Length: 250
Image (cartoon, helix red, strand yellow):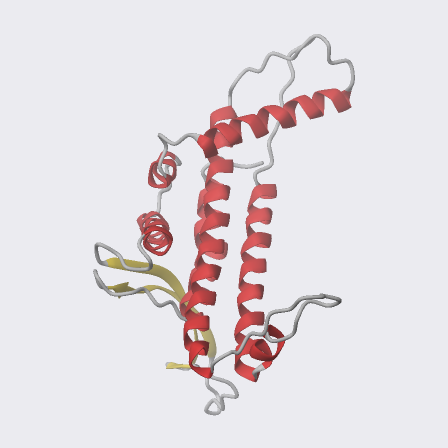
C-alpha cells in the first residue's frame, strides 16, 4: 500500500465540548427557574406515571437554598468533566501527529480504512483517559499552552472539582477561582441589569477582563449561578480555543 497522509480535525472535539457544556448550563437554568417559580417542589411531589407504589415527598421551603448550591455544584462538575474529556482528546491527537501507522493488509476499502483509523484514534484517547499515572494538571501542562491565565484558570477548576467530589466541598487550601469576565459598557458605566437607559450619545462597548473569586481554606464552597456563567463562558470562549490551537490547523 502506498504512503498516505491523514488529517485529524480537532474542531469536532471542540464542538462536542461546547455541546456538553451547553447541556449542563441548560439543565442548571431549568432547575433554578423551577425553584424560582415553585414548580420544582410541585413536580418533585408528583409520583411516577402509572406507578402502583409511590412515595410522598414533603418539600420544605428552607431546602431551596441548598438545592441551588447543589445544582450549581452539579453543573460545575459537568462543565469540568467536558473540559477534561476535551483535554484527553487533544492529548491523543498530539500523540498521533507525525506518527507512522502500519495499515493491515486485510483492509481493502476506504470504509474499512476509515474504521481502522477511527479505532486507532479512539484507542489512543482511551489510553490517555485511563492512564492513572497522568493527572489532569500533567495532561494540561503537556499541551504547551502559551497563556498563563488559561493554565491557571483550568488548574483552579481542577482544584475546585477535587474539593467538591472528594472533600464534601471543603478545600484543604485556598482556591483562587479564575474566569474571564465579559463586561458591557455604556460610555464608562457598566451595564449590570436590563432594562438599562443609557445617556444620549453614550457608546456601547465590551471588554474582557481576568477576574475571579477566592474560596478560603476550610470554608464550604458555595457556587452561584453567576460563577457558573463566568466559568461556562471561560471554558467555551477562552480555554477551549486555546487548547485547540495547540494542535495547529485541522
